[in-house]
Image 1 (tube, rainbow, N blue to C red):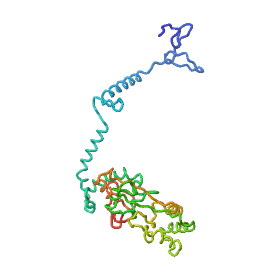
Image 2: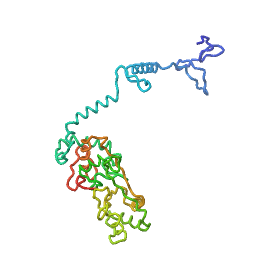
Image 3: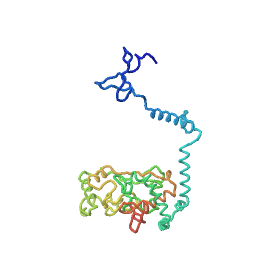
Image 4: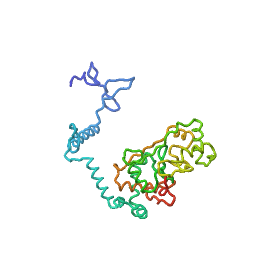
Length: 317
């Protein structure tokens, strides 16, 4: 660095004198923006200290913790911490805590389990967590369903709403890759004439309000083509995957336009199977939880009311 005063920052190039700001006492840099002069203030010491501490911490962290990648491996650090091992250990601890009560769901008597309030106090919050993590993305946080996903808190079920029926559905899925999966498909009725399709879609759309004309041509079309799967009067409940057509929460919509789309194109929804993701005991606990979802869909996360006669636990969809 030059010691020539004429070359120092803020110094006059001819005399070497530097201009001092009378207010702060700092030299100026010689830069002037419309009368505003830049001060040659020193770098804050607190920033230097913070920078030094940051560098020191990083060096210590590199030594103590896993840090540097080495191809397909990495430096382990003196402490040898591994987040995956920590997570697995915590999962094992959680499994140990659950082992006592979860074991009762291995080969369950759902009626006896439901009548044990102490067990339900432990199992249902855990089952709720299973539901939120694995089911709510499609069926809603409280089982309210949505377009293409059935409601789980009403009395209309595609494959049965008793806990043992739900457990089978969870085990094998619907139209899934499991070898024992449940299969359900609505064929396309695009072979019908447009007038017939229009009449039939209007008839089906009117079924929930009980305004469908039983003596119409559309009623005959429904009897000849739909009753075999959807049941007399479209009530469903035949355990074959065909939904009820008389409630207000039809899976693909019950307005004429939605029904027309179903008639023209057919339907084949898919539910994955969970037997590779959950244990049998977890599936049984989750099945009991789903069967106990209240009809209004307002799930109490601490004490879910037990299904009563005629509830989702005993209905068939």
